[in-house]
Structure formats: C-alpha cells, structure tokens
Amino acid sequence: MSSMTDTLTITVIEPEELAPVGRLGEWLFAEGASLRMVRPWRGESIPSLDEIGDGLVVLGGSMSAHDEGEHPWLADLRELLRGVVADDVPAIAICLGAQVAAEALGGSTAVPALGNDEVGVVELTITAAGESDPVFGAVAAEAIRAAHRAGIPTSDGTRLPVIVSHHDAVTQLPEAATLLASSDRSPVHTWRAGRLLAFQHHPESDPARVAYWRTRDALNDLAGTMDAASLQAARDALEVAAGRSAAPGAAGTHGATAADLPEAAASAGAAAREQAERVDPAIQAFGRGLARVLVRNVRARRLAR
Image (cartoon, rainbow, N blue to C red; front, side, top):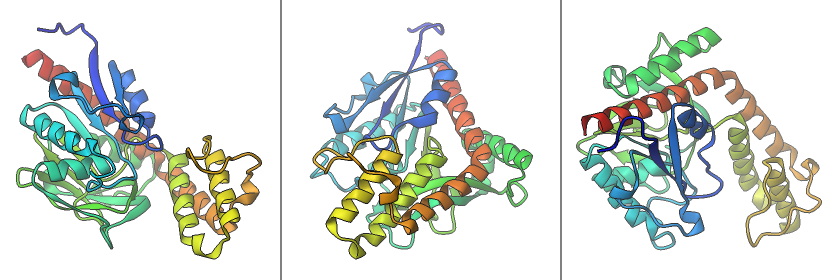
C-alpha cells in the first residue's frame, strides 16, 4: 500500500498539441499532484487502468469521438474511461474527453451537433442535482462566490460563466450519469458518473485561448472569400500571435504579421478575449476549486485503500 506521503500521480491525456492542460496543470501541481502527460498526437499509447496512477484528466481536441479510423487510440480511451468509472477512480473529462466518456458509458454524441455548438463565453444553469452534488457543488459554489466579488451576474447563484469551443456535443447521457448543468444551446453540459466529472466547457483554458478559437473560426467563415495565399498568410499570422509555428506540412510562418489577419477575424478574436477577461475571476476560481477537489478525492481514495 502506498503511504500518504508518496507523490500523487495524475495522468493527463492530451489528444492534440493545440489543446494543452494550461492553467489546470499549474493548479493541480500547486495542490501537490505530479502530472504524467500522455500525448496520442505524438504516437504515445493510451495507458491501461493500472498505469494511470491516482487519477485521470482527459482533455479536448479537434477530432471527434467518432474519428476512430484516423485516431485508433480512441477505442483504447473508451475502454480506459469505462474502467475508471467501474473502479471509482477520480477523473475529469473535458470536451472531447466528455464526449468519448459518454459513448464509453452508453450515451451518445452528435458529430456535428447542429444547434448545440458554442464558442466563447456561455452561462451554465446549474441543476438541483448540481447544487447538491458532492463533487461539482462545492466547485460551482466557489466560482459563484468569486463571481459575486467581481460583480459578475449569476442569477442568484444559479448560473455560472464558462468558456467553450465545441461543434460536437453529448446528446444522450449514459443511464448511470447525473446531469449537473446545462447551457441554453447545449442541454447536456456537465455531468457525473461515479467519480468521473465531465465538462463540455474548458476549465483549463484562458482568455488568450478563447481569442484564438474565435479568430480561427472567423477565419474559417471567411475562407471562401480569400485566395489561397492570403488565407495561408492569415492562418500563419494567427499561429504566430498564439506563439506557435504553422502546423507540420503547412506553409511556414516566416514574415507573417498581425496585418495578415483580416479585420473581421481579428475583431472577433479581440471581442471574445475581452468577454472572457471580464468573467475570468469566476473561471479561475472554478479551475482552482476543481484541482483542489480532484486532489482531495485522490487522497481520500488512496487512504481508503
């Protein structure tokens, strides 16, 4: 049996490079957890249940829960998530992770989910089950208190701002799951099965990431009106602004500047960032509370064993 002084290890599965663990990793580390990163986009295999350590975080990605042909590791991820719930392992599943978890447990995901897609800041309505949930309830309450202090509306503590970017969505909950929160466009947003907490939103993200998502989507909307060279220059400029190079195989970012971004795309990104910055006190409080609850549950499970 491991002693309580041993390092807590939480495995983080990162499906793609452009969806990193972000601030959630910092908050988990601050709570005393050691992170083991698993990156399928680098060809790393999904671990077995016995290999994940004390807890699990599954992040988002641009692939869908149905893209097993191109991403065969999705089958292994479904099996792992079934095992995590069956073995009562504390876990968090975010966006793609939540969609894969839903299908692993008998629910369903629409790809794409027309009318349920969201990008930017949305408000969650917390269900009665969510308010009383022993895992989610405390985290949501902490975020609502932070929102009150920052002057962010919460409709008397029933609504909570979160940041999102998804075009697919869970459309049917697994039978054993409990719905904890919904948004106006996406009814199945936050839910729990066992010690697995699943989010359609991104508690790990930040205003800069929101700006990137919105600018990227605006560029995609403009793609049909731009010649190939201008579109590539704009996409390269977006990657430079985000502190990255162009994707492997794409044209280089050499010489790309902010001037290569169409005004409409740049303005959309700036507006999304401003909106996210206004609610960031609540976002950060939620993320810190989530990290604390996950590590607390990991410690409790280890003690019980």
